[in-house]
Length: 507
Length: 132
Image (tube, rainbow over all chains, first blue to last red):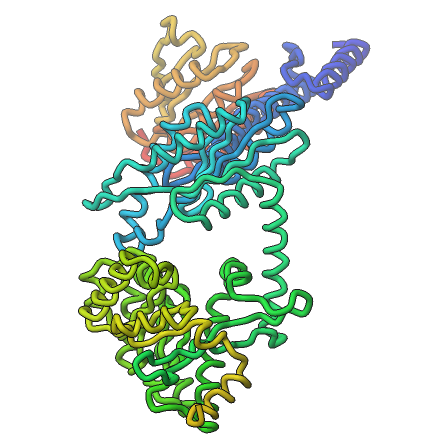
């Protein structure tokens, strides 16, 4: 081969390399029969191109496989994030996403609405029947809600709270759906062999143009909490006033935290009279909040806020500490009657603390107060709904020698046999039962029957809300042992109560 | 050299395969052959058939081979009955092809490229195999 020929072959080789380097790795260069050095270079380049091409192809296949795996993992992750594991309903995050989409997609037309349902007394099912039964109930509730609200996104937000997003419907239809959802829960559910009837507190937020997704959820939540406050099986539709009230409550909650630290809480004491002797037999400690702007606040105005803030336990301890300390001070000066008892109210939350009895014992020892000078008042509802923990706490208080009194007796649904089994010493009949006591013969018989019931269970009776002498006389005739109310005395400041105790012999 | 004629249609890429007097199995590719995966596999099967399970020195005459595909090289990288392989070529192209194979694919048995037949035979003899 001649030199010019070699030059041409080298040029062809360079052209081939240019094509390869442009990215076309399928290009192969011609090898001549000469099999000389140029051919060897050409062959080497062909082999390298072959190698590179194969590597690229393998890489592409592998990337495609990995991408598919990654996509599958992402889809699975999304499914997990979007699904409530227990019920298979949508999760909170999916609901938030769909609410935002629905709000954005509604434009000026029909606005999306949100229905929140919170099962009533679900904690009781969990506590008394166990979590497996609780889970069964939640799954069944999910199925029922799905059947009652077909076509709507249904989510489980937490524990026993469900949400239903309703799009493109008139308000009437939304409310019908909400009512249907609530009704769907009522047929009995078999939970571990026990039939459970469910109801729910339902909050509805009807959408408005311009309302953001998170506001829709927040407002439905406010409405649902309002419904829960009004008792079982209640439906409430959100209103602007609710929002104001919620805002005030949030404000109150914040203030209440500082109130505890700033010593703005105080106790008043309402004397309890032995109706048989007319002498003072004790005093009920009643909490007050000396609010810097709003003045003296009664517990009804702030205990709900305390509950929401999770401060109930702290406030309960505060009351115990102060009431027992005060009893100790009175005992020293001016002295208290032998059968005097300071009555202290405890909330259901306090009763769930297993260390309540030791806590009270340490306070009694610390302030030199005998257990018999203390009476703990627990509402009938708290006892009935309390479950085994509350029963255990009551028993240990009883063992300590602290007297237990059933508060608001006659407002709940105590079973009569249960009443006998309780380690309580007294029952306080609610003041609503005194209405018409002296004017309505039937009411008098009714109160007589209740007192008889209390006595036959081996308990003493206290009547609260006594407003006049006639009521006091009639109750005494009906063998009611103790009474309290404005007729005897309003709640007193510590100073006034001290004075009352000091002057009791003179009185 | 007791050569075995491989004139069948399946074996057209191989011009001859057989043992020489030294007990070396010699495989000669057809002139200008393009070795792809099927022809590589066929050659390997024939070699194994001839060896009958005995480790055997193998000399492959690859002079004038046009090209060896990547897939074919992957076939040659699998273990066969050969105890050692001498690749015999003559041109610079043969050397590139052979060394590319040696460099890219890890050969399962000792494998080297030679341009001299006698040198290849000596090397094979030194590899310590069972003589046939």
